[in-house]
Amino acid sequence: MQFRSTKSKMPLVSFKDAALNCLPEDEGLFVPDQTADFRQFFLHMDEKTSFNELVAAVAPSFFEGLLNPVSALKVAKNAFSFKPELIKLDDEYSLLNLFNGPTGVFKDFGIAFMSAVFEEILEKDKPVMIISAARPDTGVSMAHSLCGRKGISQVLLYPSGQINGLDPSAFIQNGGNIIPIQINGTFDDCQRLVIETIKDREFSERYNVTSGNSINPVRLFPQVFYYLYAFTQVKYFLGGDFFFSVPSGNFGNLLAGLYAWKFGMPVNGFIAAMNANNSMGDYILGKPFVPTPHINTNSPAMDVSIPLNYQRLASFYDEAPLVMRNMVYPASVDDALTLKTMDYVKNKYDVFIDPHAAVAFAAAMKINSTHKWNSNTHTIILATGHPARFADIVKKATGKAIKIPDFILALQKKCEPIAVISPHLDILENAIASVL
Ligand SMILES: *Cc1c(COP(=O)(O)O)cnc(C)c1O
Image 1 (tube, rainbow, N blue to C red):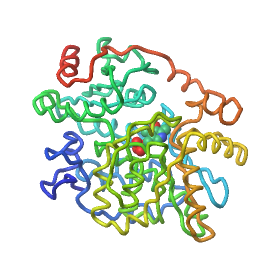
Image 2 (cartoon, protein in one colour):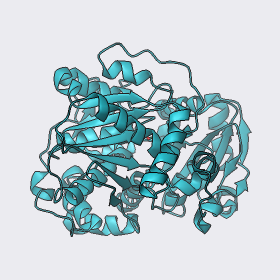
Image 3 (cartoon, rainbow, N blue to C red):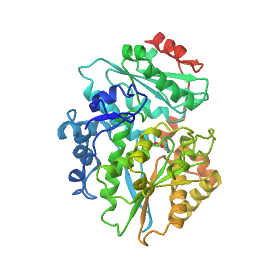
Image 4 (tube, rainbow, N blue to C red):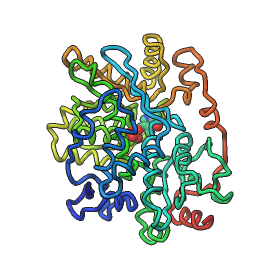
């Protein structure tokens, strides 16, 4: 499959070029140029097909020319020692648990596959530097998957605040490949600096810099796999329409769902679940996009005022606005309802969910009660975070303590970045160059 910029039809680039040079010159973002039809690869699969079998079957059509069914299985095995887990709660709702990876968030899927792909394709090429904006609590996902990979160094930019869960022996000055840098600023500053660094052609060509955030298609597209997998798991009991409810911040997860649909997954729609940072809601309903100021909530991974993937989402709406109006349903959920929903789900189904999944659950209940769907409609809630990562909020919401597994405790261990700098490109580039 070839890729082009959201801003122009030409030139077309290969997936490899889009992955290694992840921002087009024209300020757009890479999107697939064609609509592929993946139905032949997954429609015959059922609940007995393993996640890695599905990945090996579908991935070669994305990574055309790079992966074949044999190497795709190798990459899948290298990437995934974990898999999505579908839990049917009742006739109306299922949870798609995406938090069984090494750092307890759904980002593990995209990052693990990206890391394994880079390792596979870089063997003969020059080393790359992957730069990513990370939150104090989720940057560890990136560090974990890329740690020790041959030919890859990784720069993690954190906003002010404590960073947790990194292993200092993996830092570059200790012989590892991680370069954690704290930026005196916000997460949005970190996202801006990632883009500025890549756009500084001299610097980015010297070090072969690309991004590990979902602006990079090689990070975004592996997230399509778990939607297709969820479909193979629910299709045997579906009696009617079905929807996914996606807790959204940068909208990478929702976009992966939209691509799964575009490439042939039969689905009736998506619920774009947002917390109080809901500026995309109006856009989805047909108004101009007006970013609102960043608000801190109890679902922090969704506290984004300008979603990184805005242009990709807009490309769907530019292409077929009317179709999209009947495909994506936005809903915003405040902190109080988030807590209430965590408690409701624990009482009704005896399951703990994290605040991000709770936003998706509450949004689905809102949308399902205001739209007159067919009576046997089923909604899959994407549970993006491990509830034990948010043990305090779980306790506050449900009054019950959740057992925290050892791997989550390890992620909460405090550590120090290798540099603390102000949010300026030249200062950042000097800081990186000084440790290489
Ligand atoms: C990153 C994250 C989200 C938001 O996903 P986007 O792809 O940025 O929309 C939701 N939940 C959790 C737990 C996350 O870590």
